[in-house]
Length: 299
Ligand SMILES: [Zn+2]
Image (cartoon, rainbow, N blue to C red; front, side):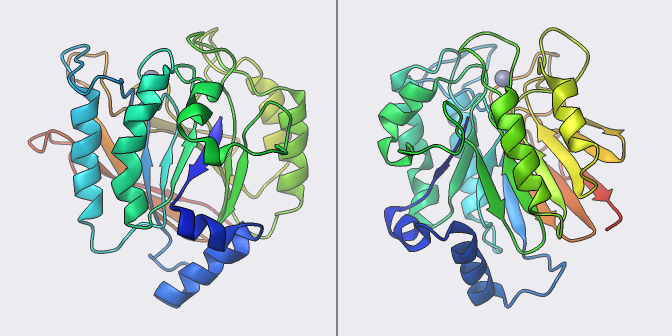
């Protein structure tokens, strides 16, 4: 379930005219040219941050990982427009203390005026999330029971979907109302590439998005959809379906293949013609640290 975290001052500035406000901010900072490298974002997934900062699982301390990435991101000379987390923000059951700790973890981003957008996953819990971040609960959600967002950037439209079905139930679900909303919002935005974000993968399995074919029936005719970005598997990979790039982000909390999979974050540059993702691994000695994934598409 996506939500947007940003500093109070900035949130007030953007209130009611979120997309227009973003464009104003972009223009002021970068005098945007189409396809400019300044459409710069940071993508994270499966952070799995527990309430206890010392908690270790699978030999990993997710709080330490989150902090280390934050320190790297805050040192970037080209400040990103925002952070997007594709779910499993919290540890395992979306406990209130997880989100309380996450609030502390994201505060330096907000202080640096870098908004954080969170698409909650199957280990998240919406009400507990709102318990720690009440300012982000919408009185009138776009779709009842779903927390969904469209971010209009200079080069692309980013759709943050809500695939949380039930906390600690592995599979995900969008639902007919959310799909109706997606179709309507995509149809209204055919002028720029669309990138979809959600937690769950679309593989043919019981542990993925249950209504993946219903999603695809909406996506396939909308030729401006160029990529679907997700987490959930803790595997760094990509594929293509009907000319849409399916991009699996690496996890940050832990992985399941004895170090074979990278843990880290992706530095993302969006343009009208494609997207470039650079992998930054926690372990700087890995051969895949700095690996670049370039995705191109026709307009
Ligand atoms: Zn996960």
